[in-house]
Structures are given as C-alpha cells and as structure tokens.
Length: 496
Image (cartoon, rainbow, N blue to C red; front, side, top):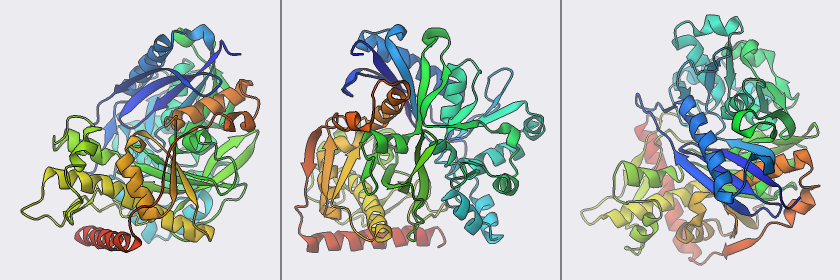
C-alpha cells in the first residue's frame, strides 16, 4: 500500500493543520493556518466554528498538494482536536448558532462552584473521572442553552446539535450525514460515564442538557463516515482528542507508559490499561481510546497555559518576533534572576484546579530584562509539568524512569534540558514530534487495515534526542521551592 497515504486533520486551539503520512509514519506534506482568537470578556475565549472548518478543509487539501497527492490516494482520514471546546449548530442549515466556547474559557466558574456547594462533585468525579471545572464542555453547552436566545427550546425540539470539535469536523466532512464523537472526546464532556461507556442520564439532569443534542459515541478507530465534496468517498476512520492521539502516536500502548505534549497547554498522560485508576492527587481519569469496543484508560494532568505563554510574549508583549526566538532571548541571561512567571491566564489546572487564578509575575527587580522574562516563561512550562509528574508518581506508587515528549514547544532544547533537570528523568524526543496528528493517522490506518497492528506502528518510532539531568539537585530544590511560593502567591491573590 506504499502508494496510499493517510490524511490527518489536526485541529488545535490556535491553528488548523493537515498532515499527510506514509506507511512509515513519515510526513509527506503539511499545511497550517492560524485562526482568530476572540476574547469578549475577561476569562472568556471563543472561536468561530465556521472559520475552524474553513481553515481545516483548506489545510487538509493543502497538505495533499504539498505531498504531491490527491484525494484518490488517501486510504483514510484521521481527526484529532482540541478536546473540550463546545460547538452548537443548526441541524438543518449546518451553521453554528453562536461562537464556540473554548476549553480555556472560565465563564462557568461560578456555576461549577454552585454545583460543588450542592455536593455534586463526588458523583460527577466517580462517573466521569473529571473535576467540576469550567475546563470541560458540559458546563459550556449549559451556558449556551441558558444565555443564547431561543436555543434551549430549539435544542429540546431536536433542531440543534452539540459536539466537541471532532463532531463538528465529521459533520462537515460527511455533509451532515454523521453526528458522532469518539469515546476519548466524549469522556471530556462531564456527560459521559466512562465506566458504562455511554451518556449518563443523571449527569445530563445535573447539567440540564437535552440528550437530543448529543452525538453517537463511536470507537476511536474504525470507519464512521465518508467524505463528500473534495474528499468524496474517503473513509473517516480515526478520531481521538489531541492528548489521547499523542499518547497513541508515541506508541504508549502498554500500562505505565507516559508522554507529555508541549502544545498550547501541556498534557501529561499515562496509560493505565483496562483499569480506570482513581487519582488521589488531583489528576484526571480519562478514556485513552476505544478500539473494537474495548476501552483503554489513562491518568492525565492538564496545564492550561504551556506553549501559549510564548505566544503571549510574541503577540501581547511583542518582545519576540516568532516563537523560536524565545530560546535566543532566554539565552541572553544565565538564569531567570529570581523571576517566576505563573501563567494562570485561564486559571490553574492540575493539581491546583483554581479557575479564579490569573497570571502573576514575581521577583522583578530594576535589573530584570526581557531575557529574564523569556527564561521565566520557558521555565514556567517545566515547573508545571514537574508538578504533574510528582502527582502521577504518587498515584502510580513509583516515579517514571523516562518521559516521551512531543508538541511544538518540545523543539526547544533549553526547555527539555530544564525539564530533565527538574524531574530527574530521561526526556526523549522522537524524530516526529507531530505525534498528535500521527496518532490520529495511526488510528485511522488501523481502522482500514493500512497498518495491521500496534507492533507495526511501534517499529516506526525513532529517537531524535535524549536529555538527562545535569543541574545539581540542591539547585533544583531551590528552584522548586521558589516556584511553590510563586504559585501560592498567585492563588492567594485570587482569594484562595
């Protein structure tokens, strides 16, 4: 099947990408477009779902052009996506009824607090493996139903459809023929019982979401629809949320294997096999993927602002021209000069779960430069991931010995060396760091027999670079203590 390829649609928080892969997991073509971020109020983040589809279709077709291929050569399409972003659209017209509410959005914080005060969190956590936090899409769709004129009545009448971004893409790909989501994305809604593998009536009641809105839950690998238009007849055969796709793309098929993705946020996942391990240290229990009706679970720690802190330096502060320049700027100083940046721009995720926190900068002196700020920004990513690693080690009863990494920010040698120093682990970066898209491609390829099994996929993984601890542990201890004080100060300013 060497003349055939897999097309991955990688729909992220700030850009849409199409990537074409061959049977060795090598990228043959790529196309990427950023799209508009809307911030209508403090703590609110929105996307235009139509713009997302338009950019995703263009980049998918653009990747085929870049690879010198056309739709007739595509064996299957795999989709991976920003997971908790909520889209609500009209079933008849196919158009969104309002802007999508992004996973980073904090507008439902008070509603989550109210549910907690009613004692609902234990029940929700038991069924979903999640926390009552604005991060997840269930409270976002509830907000739409309550605040967009006429929407609740139309939803209850079956005129509207809700979905995470994967559902929206499949709907458009298939010309409205299929309204589906996979188990990994469903598990991020607060509406899906991860143990029973279905939407939960009690949870729907708590969040007051009509079942008529919801998509069918399908396996993460297997044909669930066919393309129309420019991709007519191409099977859609793989769907996974971005972090689950990265876990699969890194070949973490066995319990105990872990990866961290350095994207807009940072997401640490550890395969726990057929067991939905309950975290005692404020991590999440989630669906990794579902294949052949069998569910693989994972533990996850979520950092809301990872690589996005570099985008902030570029777009808002304008102290760098592009993301790679942050490494050069950070290298102009020997250390951060005692400066700590806590990038709680959208609240704090695991293990703090404080939706009210906002970003804070500590330790500024008259001698603080843009170099110190750039270094503190990169170091904040490493500190947040180390927080997660420490929690995961407690849950697992043992620390990991190595960490597989991917995502755009993993191209930074400075960041990965700092990560190895803080965590005392061997950090391994593969030659293909686009493992999110690769995971979606693998799931799609397995769904149509392009690859026969996971063993064939494992053989494709190649090491690019490994980083081991170099900094003395006594220095690391001081850095970690400073970080803990900074986080405490940030939370204190937010009112606890």
